[in-house]
Image 1 (cartoon, rainbow, N blue to C red):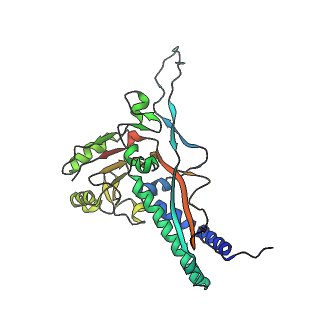
Image 2 (tube, rainbow, N blue to C red; image 1 turned 60 degrees about the horizontal axis):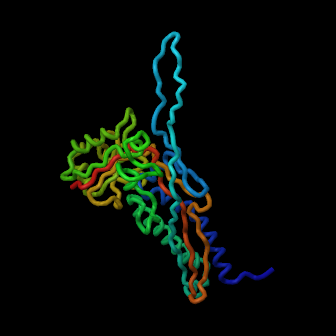
Image 3 (cartoon, rainbow, N blue to C red; image 1 turned 90 degrees about the vertical axis):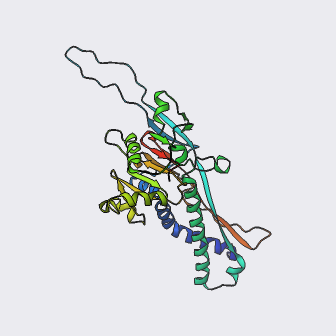
Length: 316
């Protein structure tokens, strides 16, 4: 049996360390944004394979009716659902090690520290990149970015392969509101728009916004509404203000002047079952004394109910 080389031993060691850290990576990933935390809490992180993401979408109800003795039941067929289709999006973060640093530190403890630090930086970089894309429209980096809130919570364009229009399917993937009136934020204006996203007993449970706008709400709220409810979010570091039963939180990646009203019941984060926060392993370039690897995940957030969401922009 061949004796493993230094590179092979290091690669095995790093792969083992990466696998050990993977649980923390997944945990930190879903704590990085309030929406992701709610998605995980709701157990809506499906692992899937295949060439694309497919999500069923109900866009209308059956025509229920009262009836009397001798009445005939309707036998008409109602199309009530369709399939939303999304591309897998691929995100990676490089993990680099200087072989010279490793060779000069033969102590196993010191090598572990180097490897652990490199993986930690890679994990933070992966999370930061995803967080920066979460509020985008998927067109960044030549349309390689994830399909974020800017495209999911909108009244125009196409979502999940369905054109937003005036027909039943088209209106079902339109956001409840997308108001760019802007100006000074008032609780009255918030309340008016909140009501547009309330359908029967279903309503937004999360409002994600900037620090500036969160402060405006905090200043106008009653003390009893501050840091109440939203225990799942406060436990991972989010300050909350209650508004109509929803938790208002700050996300540093929300663009200036924006506020998203989200019903997280309709959100999922699809993860590919072959590349679910995996370390690819190290390769050593022929012209460098470096070990270069990648942390990789394939996935995309999906909103099955855009009509239960809304956004305000241009607020001060």
